[in-house]
Length: 270
Image (tube, rainbow, N blue to C red; front, side, top):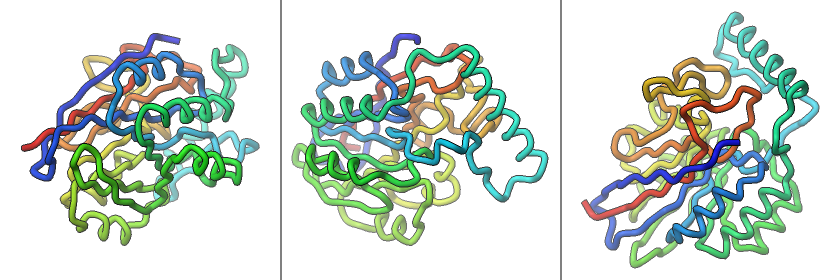
């Protein structure tokens, strides 16, 4: 597994009272990521956002994810073939780090000792287990499932929200109109065009596409679900949406030109 890197962006907003730094952790997928954790400890951010797929909480007897209904029969066939081929390759060649919830527990526990932790749900997290909720409560980890909460960080009055893979657009509308510095955790960056772009949210934090797995000339080749050349693969978009390349490699095909990353966002006054 390639060594992780630290990526930094600066985002400005008129609602920022005092500069602050947010760490973005995405797509951990229950893998060991000690290098990411070490970068996080060195960075000492003011808050930490886990933007989905921290755990693998779905039916593991079903290896092929559910396909979005609006895709046609040819797209469905292609996606199913990609999933089956990847699964077969993983069985033949294996991967260095198998998913294990204890990896995510350990990462979250240590992260909670660094700064306040906020966590939203991704497409690999259909439903958390009772032991997960008990863990979140014990370590004061704030789970945001189509909901938001108020907090104060370095003299900034903030509203932190989490838009889940099964999005509640009515909640998103209410959240976007609240007073304060608004930060949204949204695992799916593709929701930006359909739901978020017209809102006045200050910062959107996403993941999901793993940076495109293989990057050529600064562009990711594949996105989650088999999409080719995803629009939002990794980087800063529209000066307010940050998409992480992710903290783990879950595919049999290795990353190329696309290291795993911890992302730091420096929020400053516009």
